[in-house]
Length: 348
Image (cartoon, rainbow, N blue to C red):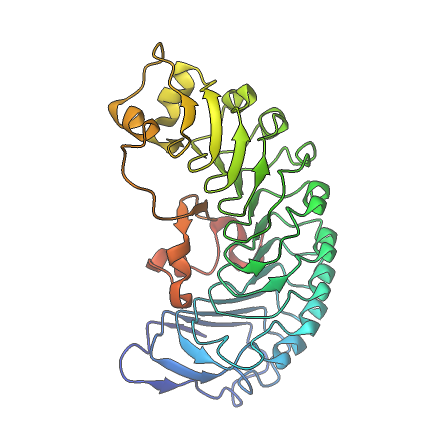
């Protein structure tokens, strides 16, 4: 069953599905802003349900415990429903970790609260975990290190505590994208990159990082295309090893306390162009022998366009910003697609 923009006018109560066959495999509600009500009681005995998607609605009442009783579920995408977390206990059910066949779990932009259950570490087949743009607190659970098949992790723009970047990420070699931006994690950038050579995108914007940028990021992240370290308190010089990254097409280091020369070659700067973001670092020196564009020179001197948003890269390969989290809604229709191409239908 597929409902795409079917409920866009007058408010419509989420329909009861008790009469629908228990053999139903897919249930999809996308872009139905007039849809309201609670998810509780709608699933019936859907023992064959593999895919449930709810995006862009006004459904409320939290994520019901009964969703953990769907043994065949491979994809659970409940995203961009700003009212969902507006209940006394708008948390992730503890038993969600019992959905052993789950490959895609996306609960982003719902205003959910509480801590992340340790039981999520039981989802051994999980490829994608997106809990971004909620109000989760506490510590990122170390049990997530058990997700050895995980390729995409986005925990950005929550309220996790000052516990630093999780060291267990270095023991998850299949990771391709990691986004933790917008959380007050604090601490220095850890030396965890040796086993993460497959990383394509890393977003650590606005997390309170201090200390230097480790040269090991340039040595080991040989496949990376996006690095976001902006809006932190990083200091020292920019490691010359970052200039050896052949596949990077965006590097955001703006609004830190970096100093010294820019160690990038002219071809490197020319290839990245305006996606090399260094403004807001008053101690950086411009090498006049390098061929900089007018816009880059203005940016480096702090005369460029002001920076108002913290940016990360999402699973569609383009930046998303903190304003995307407002009211649990996305700024574009594309952000309400259930999954990135690599994770559609729960297939890797």
